[in-house]
Amino acid sequence: MKILLLGANGGVGRLIVKEAAARGHNVTAFVRNPAGPSPNGAKVVAGNVLDSQSLSNALSGQDAVVYAIGVKSTGPTTLFSESTRLLLAAMEQQGVKRLVCITGVGAGETRGHGGFLYDRIIFPLFTKNRYADKERQEQLIQDSGTDWTIVRPAPFSEKMPHSDFRAVTEVGNVVLRKVSRAEVASFVLDELESGRYLRQIPFIGHEN
Image 1 (tube, rainbow, N blue to C red):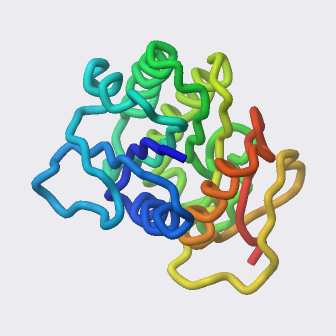
Image 2 (tube, rainbow, N blue to C red; image 1 turned 90 degrees about the horizontal axis):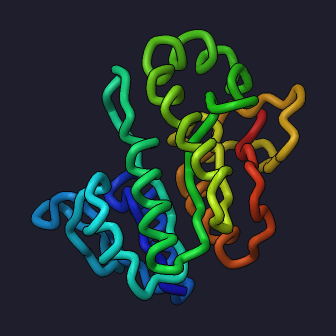
């Protein structure tokens, strides 16, 4: 599979590149600064996610797109929604249908389902603004004609969780407190290969 990866230099993005290469896929890493550290195992293409022409050029000949962009800023942002709006238009132009987008706990019905520390401290103080835009992003994707999957990981954990991994599409009373970046990378690639959650929004992680 030929995969265009946005966010290849992030923690999850680098793991997606590594595992995708091990599975025999060809990854094109769309990066803002090609002179910086580049992910091993990927073809690197320079571009700006807010530039429609560079997105369209990078999409030529691709089979699928993975959106793994993150931000460190805690202030208001429109990066996710604006880049996704341009990406979707470029995908339509180039005839690329498959999209897997990583958002996270705090979007939609997962808000309040990340555990006490995340829900009461991290979300209101640090991630609230980015998730306001990720909700706009998710709606754009759901309204598009792409073959989409939106993946909402639990809060990231540096240690591998011990409880069973879960992937739920009906959140209900489920609280998922942690997930490793490696698990997210594997889940994304599994989904690209299987299409099990086509046009669904799995919430993934561990209860403790």
